[in-house]
Image (cartoon, rainbow, N blue to C red):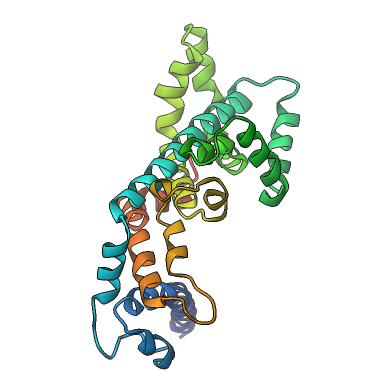
Length: 281
């Protein structure tokens, strides 16, 4: 009887937590579904349907308006260039910095790491004006390089990759160094394969974060040919209720397609980052 009671209690507890997880997923998923289905609604249907997801009448006019008015392939290409360059440069500097902090220690390593951590709490509004003035003096306003240049390093990426590299046994690197193996070879052939899940998940996080940026590209980019997909929503924004919400929803649905595909391809790697504890000595 005691065993059955324990099983019932355990089953009840598991059911409760499964319900909590399902409810949480629904809360996070609802805005995306609302955006997608609203892109097939008429404007009056968006505001009169309340929380109802499915449209009363399915239309593709919103997508036709977006594709007809905007150069969507060019917008996606600009976003891909900015997000791809930003992610690549950030990952390169973060991996090198994390490797140096973990496997090339010196008396200043701890101070440098804490300095990186402190910069995580500096808001963007503090460095926005100095960055803009610097880019203006370098004549990089209204260029894609101007969007990428101030984002050459990321403290959060350095922190997370450093934490992953700390799980790699230092004895592996010490043995390689005794055989006069260069640090870059140790990084490429020993460390990176062991921290691959953390590196891939961080790369996708940085890519999506850069892809979704709105305010900084809005400050730097002026010409229509250099606009990103997120900036294109301003063409449908108006005052006094004149915003074309159906078009905005259609454009937003298009903009999340690539990040969503990237996540679907790398979801196992991302999940394994949280589930695995790494290799420890």
